[in-house]
Structure formats: structure tokens, C-alpha cells
Image: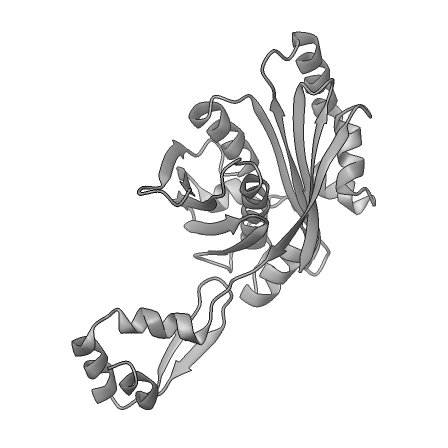
Amino acid sequence: MSNNLNIATAYDDKIRIYACDTTNIVKHAQDIFNLWPTSCAALGRTLTIALIMSYMEKMDSKITIKIDGDGPLKNITVVAHKGEVKGFCHNPGVYLTNNNGKLLVGQAIGNGTLTVIKDFGLKEPFSSTTELVSGEIAEDFAYYFNQSEQTNTAVALGVLFDKEGKVTNAGGYLIQVMPNCPDSTITKLEELLKNIKPISNLLADGLTSVDIINLLSDNTAKILETLPIKYHCGCSKERFLNGIKSLGNDEINNLIKDNEDLHITCNFCNVTYTFTPEDLKKLL
């Protein structure tokens, strides 16, 4: 379930690049939620960008991403913190393609909004919402960075599948222009991006995230960090018991009167916890 994320600078430190291979993470998400390809591509792309963003802030922060659309996929929620990510989509059973077999992620999500919440542990988290540009997620996040953070950013995200609809490769990269970057460097980078293969195809060709950074930087990159990333929920029966306890004694007594086991399934890992009436009585 784990992979690595690499951070680099390039072009005389005027460009910062984040790149990661999230194949194992997206495979894990597909397995636990039984995701159909279009749903999996949408969630996988969002998991990938959330992991990148989890290492972008100087302050320790938890990143929550919410994508709400009017398409059949409806919404996606992803939470990331320092290389650990979890998430789910409202409808795991979406499989939309065009005549050439291309997954129609944008159509599956539809029109709507992208919300990014950054919790720095202060009184109130920082929240920013932008309109979805295409629903393809990479373009939507490039727009988010340009609008909400006033940072010139390029984003590429991808998930590749085999003929049986199983994930074979997944990953992404994010490029940000630093202050005082020469126009000539930006132009060179733009031309390079026009001709580069999709990120999932690069990974399928056997390239690592470091290889992709070197490709993006015309071999001018300096790798600053190699950091762990993984899918991690962190739920437990005890945490859900604490949640039930917060309902108050009256509500807990009502649950006990039903004299039936209570079953709660975690949205983020699909594990179901069972609580007997005896478990609930201990909360009073």
C-alpha cells in the first residue's frame, strides 16, 4: 500500500516539482471499495493530489478535499496528512467511456465545486472553494492553485487500467513556478509539457517518479526529499465507541432498547464494526 513522493527544484531553483507513483495506494482503494474504472480514476487522481498537497505546507496541516458535482459520481472526499491519505467517492460503480475507451471522468463528476480545507490546528481551519473547470481533477487543481493561492501551477494526474478494469499504474506530478522565474524558463517548460506523455503512461513505461522529474526538468533537477506515502485510515472500534458516546445517554438507551447489534461501516476503509447491546451499556 505504500509508495514514495519526491520533491525537487530545477532550472536554477526557479521551478519546484513534486512527483509520486501512487499505484499501490490506488490499487488498495479499488480493492476495498470495489471501484469501477471511472470512479476509481476520479478517486485515484484525488488521492494523488492530496498526498502531494500534504507535503506542500511548511506548517503541519491536515488537508481535506471535497469535490461536489452534479454527475453520477456525485462527490469525493479525501483527507491527507504528511503522506498518509484516505478517501471515498459517493458512487463507486461509475464506468463512463467514449467510443475510444477513454474514461469520462469529467462527465462522471459534472459541474460543481472543489473545496480545499487546511487545518493547521488553530481555532478555525482555512477553507477555499473554486468552481470545477472540467471535472478532470488535474485541470481543476491547476485552476485552484492559480485562483486561490495565486501560484502558477501545472498539475498532471492519472490512473491506468488493464482490459479487466484493474489498476496497473497511477501517479501524478505538480510543478510550481518560483518568484522571479525567467520567461524563457516558463516557455521552455510549457513546450516540454505539450509533448510529454500522460503520467500514467510514463509509469507504465517503467519510469520512476525521479525519472519523471528529470524528464520535466531537462535533467536540471536537484532532488530535495524522498518521502513515504501510504493509504491509512486509522479508524478503530474504540474511536467509533467514542463517537456513539457523544450521542448522549438518551440516544444510547434507545439503541439498547432495540436489543439488536449495531453495525457501523467506516467510509474511509469499508471496515464494519459491530457493537452489541452489552457494548453500548458500558458507555452509560
